[in-house]
Length: 559
Ligand SMILES: Cc1cc2nc3c(=O)[nH]c(=O)nc-3n(C[C@H](O)[C@H](O)[C@H](O)COP(=O)(O)OP(=O)(O)OC[C@H]3O[C@@H](n4cnc5c(N)ncnc54)[C@H](O)[C@@H]3O)c2cc1C
Image (cartoon, rainbow, N blue to C red; front, side):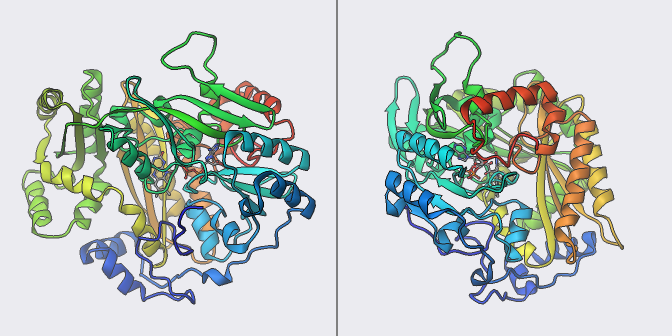
């Protein structure tokens, strides 16, 4: 297995701020927050939320409760025969590392010492053939298989729930994580599913190429996970969503191996590639992917703009979309998110920017980050045309520094989450997409639902939203929620809010998810989006490929 960082309960990697000591105690919340948040931002949060920072550290790793493995010895022996002793693990650390994902609920449970979602064993196949043989064996043995990529699911995709309560294994894809072929003339790279973004970009950079999929989880998530969840990255508006960048893939199932997708194009019936993308491990395991790559951009230009209001910003983006002028990166924050971002930025430059915006009547501004990448002549032309439309919409250009600063810090926010969780906060995100027509209604509905369900005894949530993926027909909406945590019933507090928000966004015309996928958390609502017949079609496909129902049974399809 690749190098493993020290095991912690932190939500995000080993390089993030870690205030947990060996015995699970923490620095004072004030000390931890001082390192992570400017004082102005901390004061703002306390005032907005009615929150008093307090120490709510996670339990020590040694105190996490893990039940003994339920994998029968005969089943373990069979898996060892197939993969070798070193690739079948039942030790505490291997199981804890594959317990659940990174949603707020996952982190809460782990912080409370609950690892009841941990697999009974971890298996590490090294090839498509080994994976297919393993799946057939697990089918016979009645052992549930949950594919595990980077473990960054935020929708309970790794919950491992099985209605029949069978033993389960996490199928770790880290042994299949290399570049297998590069076809430069066809702009195609063939890679193993366990490959992470940084390693893929390093390999491509040597050939002057890039893949360019940059979700905020880029450092840890894998390409197999992106395909299984239909991920979107920060520049998906320009380069396309992950599913648009997959030219073909191999899916190992308990019933055999499927090769789907035939680049450059085919009209041989419905495209079966679409069945594998977003299948979240329920049909089998993606063991190889052919991805579309492109030349590394010769230039890039990032900049900030400001609108007097969120509505004005949305109208301008819609205009850009209609004229096919959306840049590669688009991120429009509402007034609440813009204010928080401005407060998080410290230093004289940030103070000057705040004063300028106030002076120009943009005190409640909606900030927009735009990014263009590619050939210099194309970037110049696209930027010029878009800028003229934006100025005509009343936007103020804030310049490159604001854009470059966003780019520099764009992977940092997740590292802050642990510190906030350890100081008594609820921190979670949710997302959807809607047509340009429905977007304002969806925005209002989600905010209202979250506000109503999270307001209690003088405390209210801070709800910050942005649009980050534009299409000709509409855009995604991403919402970050902060609130004073209910220390007595923290899980119930979020479940209630999440249920209200999901009901509200669907009723207002939003999609169940834009890029986080369905997982265990959204499955009760899947039928609302695809209809009862749609669910039956998916069940029929699953029945054919996975007749024993061993492939990640706790996600996607409603119970
Ligand atoms: C801080 C943070 C930021 C994030 N930002 C973004 C973002 O910007 N954009 C975005 O789209 N998502 C984002 N996510 C969500 C998450 O990173 C994505 O869903 C990602 O695609 C999951 O990849 P993974 O390798 O970690 O998969 P995992 O979490 O390991 O698995 C996710 C699901 O896919 C299945 N699966 C994994 N690998 C395979 C495989 N090879 N074959 C079949 N099934 C498989 C799993 O069983 C599970 O159901 C974020 C998450 C976090 C914690």
